[in-house]
Length: 360
Ligand code: NAP
Image (cartoon, rainbow, N blue to C red; front, side):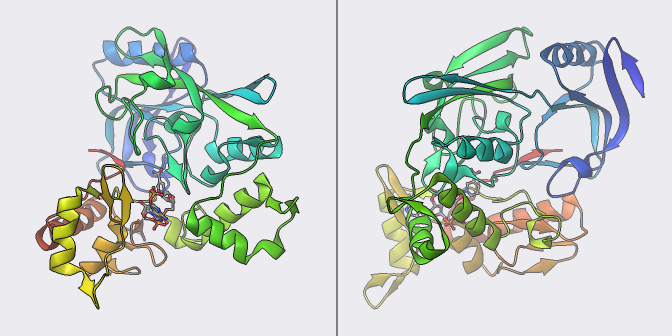
């Protein structure tokens, strides 16, 4: 252990315990930061010592190299939730280190609507704006009002209004132009008081309809808690809830982004691969700017089926997009991921983009 003012630096810390996929060597230095002052001091220390810095939240979207990280890993653990009530809305501020699903549960219990479909997504509050997490028809950009971040260059806090975050499908400025420039400190969401849940997403709506007798409802409308419960069950079925007793959940969730093709490219794809009896056999969703094709379908078409195993890694038996660790290494995960990318590209001409942050 090494001390620097009020900071507790741990040395040679195995990173596998801090990632949901359970992989990664050791960090030379590791600090859990509970205050903004600690974050600042750590950045100054790293600069003086000429060490690279890696920011870590819940570890559900990061994969570290088997060799570890020869620098300083900062785990952001800034906590606290504060409510500011308006007439029918509530502004709710959450520290970046709050566990996202605990936060969703808290909001649902307080009958605050707007993030119930995002139940069960692993990770911390601070990570939510970075990739604009979304599921079952909701995404955090629908409810984020603003956020506070620390500028790693100036060490000053900066406020970003939602419209300045460049939110897009699983995208924001913090993942593109300003990647690694800011450390998110807290996020402010605007939720609806006693609001009705959103459950238009077909998979979710069908599930609720089919199981509605199992749930309580208010005036025939599912409650926020009904929707949360349904989402958790759907995610559990796909091993997309982190559960130590489920080996298929030892992953970072979806490994690849779902590609959106132009309408012309999609037409060509269908002509080549996907017509049977006059109908297209390729699952697809029309958006205003193109056609979304589920990456999981492309992966399975290339022979990487659910349940596939190679050495110590494989593909979840319950979801084609999750690469799982069954006692393997980061090298094996990346080899498999690159093989999948290459095969999908040679067969379909589509480049699958990797979703997690790979720190090598
Ligand atoms: P899935 O149901 O297998 O769907 C795969 C893809 O098809 C997704 O891109 C999804 O779009 C799209 N899709 C499915 N039904 C659709 C419909 N009726 N209309 C338009 N698009 C449709 O997805 P999954 O992997 O099991 O995940 C379930 C939900 O969790 C999805 O909403 C997915 O996006 C979300 N998820 C988010 C993250 C993240 O934020 N990083 C990671 C994993 C999963 P959408 O993506 O627009 O829903």
